[in-house]
Amino acid sequence: MRIHSKEDFLSVFDKIVSHFDNMSWFFKKKKKESEYLNDLHKEYIKLSYQRPQVLFKHSHKCGTSTWVLREFNEMLEGVDCSFDFVLINVFDKRPLSNELSRVLDIPHQSPQVLVLKNGKVTDHASHGHILQLNITHLLC
Image 1 (spheres, helix red, strand yellow):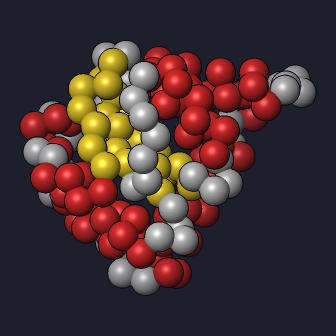
Image 2 (spheres, one colour):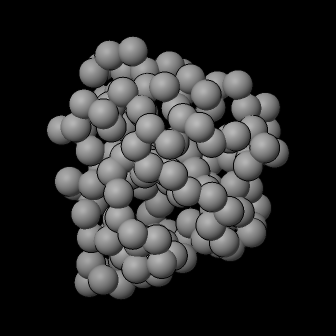
């Protein structure tokens, strides 16, 4: 799906939110936010052993972030292998964004892409450098 408008973006964001809403196993007991964040970043790392995880930190209030997200989405359409794309809204999920930065030891930027594969960050970029990533090589 290409993101051409605010409605397209919101559609993608809604799919991601519904993905987390469907993770009932994850919310079996009430957790403190710090426990939730700890488990969530561990889940991304765990999933990266099955297939690459592309984490995109996005600020919906930033024109550059919106433009890079749209262009990056077009780049991902050309990738012919299995991976998960996770959009992290840094305003709504700032604690998660900060926790990922801390655990992965990569300073926070927005927009920012982190590629996780086999439990490690294989590459990361921010702002216009995101569009210079050889994403097919990183994911396949």
